Amino acid sequence: MEVSRRGQPVRGIPMARVALAWVLNNPVVTAPIVGATKEHHLPDAVAATWTARRRS
Image (cartoon, rainbow, N blue to C red; front, side, top):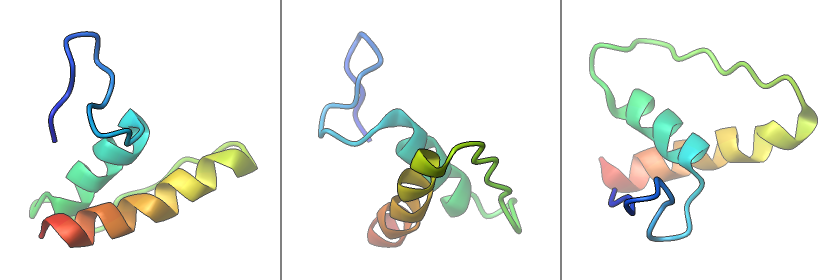
């Protein structure tokens, strides 16, 4: 995933989703724990699973 110099995603994908997708693709991690404290955090967590699948 490319990131601009300001840390913003180049392709319009939120950084939280990119980070979780990276964890999901990390072979050392067996089960990532999503710490969603607010309901609006959940869509990015779910979308990260799709992002991770597309990259693997």
